[in-house]
Image 1 (cartoon, rainbow, N blue to C red):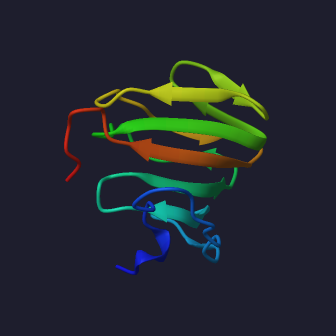
Image 2: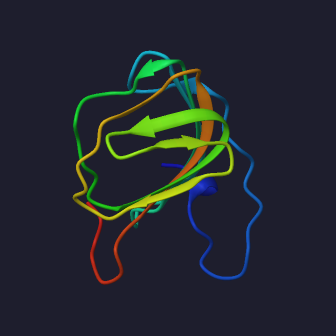
Length: 115
């Protein structure tokens, strides 16, 4: 892995966003920002209208900020400006009715180690 998307050892670091690339699921595009071996990941995520996958959980804290469009999960619907945080192990199934762009941040729970 290139060190260009890792966290800086101290201070701050300007990081150019990666190019848009196909995501894991159809209709999903990802633009990586941070992909650090310590388990910190930040990305922009665009999703097309429709379901966004099967029921699943993450082993890290998941934070989602909806930039435009709409997003939903089994608990609620979210619009531009809404922020969602999920703790590790939270089961979820999600999607979008009209498509959306989100900033997604994954972070290990303090004191845990990410795989």
